[in-house]
Image 1 (cartoon, rainbow, N blue to C red):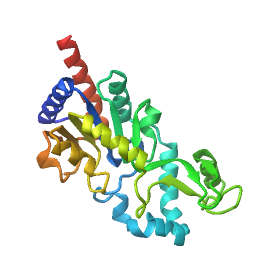
Image 2: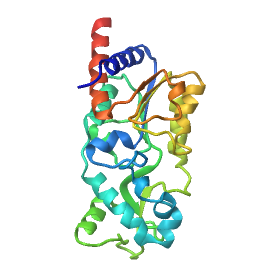
Image 3: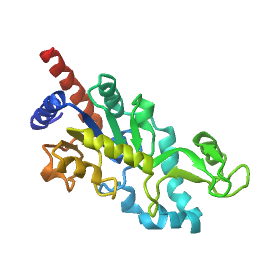
Image 4: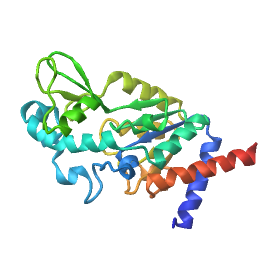
Length: 261
């Protein structure tokens, strides 16, 4: 049962979105937890509660201790590969199809936004859809890597030169992809409302995107189970699971459209 105060907050959010000119969504790992993919920073269950990110998820870790890197990344990749979009991903895709939202800027590597039908998805941290050989440049599909893990291999190797494959995700010590970053900046400049879903807003520099939107006067809506550093500047803060929040938001937005048509 959702608290009535939260329901009123979601209804108010729907009104703000209906009156906005250009709505951009910014998502983090929290939107995918209902799909069975762990987030990184929540208490008890977050991956960084169990791992030191610089020890397992850095470029140094990949190059110098690939066994440790893949001990961390392999189960994350397998859960992401098998995951299906949840109600939050599907709801955002519906809002995009209705031209209510214009784009999704995501920190996630799971491609669940694309699987749900979203068209304009900007991936700031890359995607686990492909793996590239750092030596010869051969690209290997996620399906091939998943099958190699299923057959008992713990580290994926390039089929051409047999060197260790690197997932096409952004690790600590790596810069963000410039093309994705530039598009995200353009979308942020256009936005008069940014909807933040499932992000702790603690990962730099991706976290600067919502701050930039707030600084230029965009309305900010934050949907996250735990507090974020931007909460005090937000217009609305809704501490509700994304898979509950987005479907409710879609219903209220549709009501707004009917009432105003």
